[in-house]
Image (cartoon, rainbow over all chains, first blue to last red; front, side, top):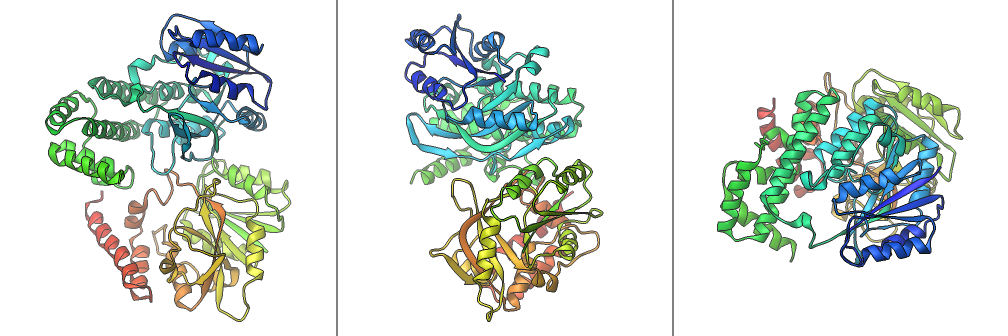
Length: 342
Length: 260
């Protein structure tokens, strides 16, 4: 059983060594690591070549910049393993992640498996926060659709996190290749991981989510995902459309699809609203919110029956947005932020 | 002996994890009683496959769908152990859970009125979910425990005799009764529980579970909920402990009006 570990690399000279080091230290040894240099302009390219020289299991692909999706696809094409795993070049993995996951894969004859992750900020592993994912084993397609697919669409994040990433996972390569699955371009949806998994899951019969923390995900304070622009709203719209199409293809009831998509949109939009309030003054906030709201194609009208199904905070934000009570919303968010940082 | 009791409804996708954690127990002398509340997934096959492969006895009973409270009443009848522990189908337990429970029970003074013992709920990193107290253990009734900061979900293990003495009330057409109703009745009858700080239970809160759908659950099982509130208000709990649930009751009463 061979594993191909795919690492897309783009201008990560600061973190790349740590990442590859954690892969090289694996207790499981039957792997190849494909570093896909997506046209880096810093020392990353050189560092990749150096690693390939140090360890024969490491291979390098240099390509012109095409984004995260294209880098992962290049890795998939070059992979020789029976199973694939993706590691982001600024993250770290625990030394037993692959032995643990592959053991589960073999024992349960799985098509794919996800584990949970630690999230830490910039350089400080001490800031790791632990969020739990549910322990689920699906053994037929109906169960996968009901217990995993729909949850990824609604991105429910109450007490438990839903594993929708492409990292901290192992995929059976034949399912991806036989079905010509391509990782979508990250610039269109911001949720290319979720998108890929929504395409992948319906092709599986046996999938597991296991709540073991084996992957360290680095949150970058300055990263792109923290920007606030109308592109974000476009991304939300795009994803909603994609999720709807994929769900319809699986014959899921339209009513259920709409609700899940609506919940997700409410959560994403609320998050965006909060970032906007934190980043701008009242007048700018009101203007932008009105604009973003008009660009949003999904209805986020809150309903009493949603209480308990989505976080109160999200319901409240959507309620205030819907009734255009922007000033109150702004004050509330600012108050909440202040309160949090006391 | 401990009877681990699991009521389940269409949870074939989580049961394997509970099963594994039971197989990993340091003490094998326990019994697992599973009452299937009318599942239409692979639960039956799954459990039948496990039946003869384990060191511990597995008893599987299927009942027509009637809710957790009927399942518990049903399961108590099949319990061979002196101790009865309700473990939900989407949760898992620590490797030393049964061992600890046996130890705790044998340490209970026989001349005092104890209904059972309780460990605490947490995660594998050692974080306790809910409130906690200083010291190894604390003796208090279910009605008093909030006072000692023993807050939130705990995992009570009762003498099976007590479970038989205090069955769950069952209302026609209703499929849920708050567990606390029975725990409070036990407390009102003068029984204490010995609470421990050890984490023996790992909880999960799933989309289709009771916790997520609290409001909907309570509203559609109104008689059971009302009885719980009525008995709580009349109990010896502190005013504060009665006030908050009562406000919740009024809120849900209003919600009931709007609910379609």
